[in-house]
Length: 176
Image (cartoon, rainbow, N blue to C red; front, side, top):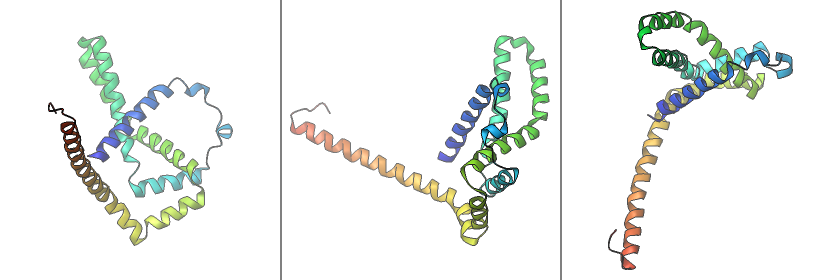
């Protein structure tokens, strides 16, 4: 549940970034000025993200952008539903290419945070039995931990309210 919320939030953030960056692309500095990682480092980052399952989290953003703009166009003129929906079909035909571009951008972000050797070491680690176990069990562990934390917080909230009410009663306040 939390993972879905995070994925949705990240997807929304990605949509916002895509919308906001659409007008800035013409002003972007050259790759040399940006100090971008080499293609090898980007490929390693993409390989690591594929191992970890981190690339697909942003994929819903692509459809989200299409649906968002479809809805805007239909608010402007609801009579154009047929034409707008036909355009949506055309836009969705481009989804695979857009996903590749998005995955590349995500990998570049990762590649700027880690060195080539660090990426190689992480890939090697995630291919070990322990690394595979972490990849398999970490989502379950995170979900179980979140559930336990929520249960603890609910119990603490009940205890805190009981203590606060008891203190208010001691002070002569009975409306609590």
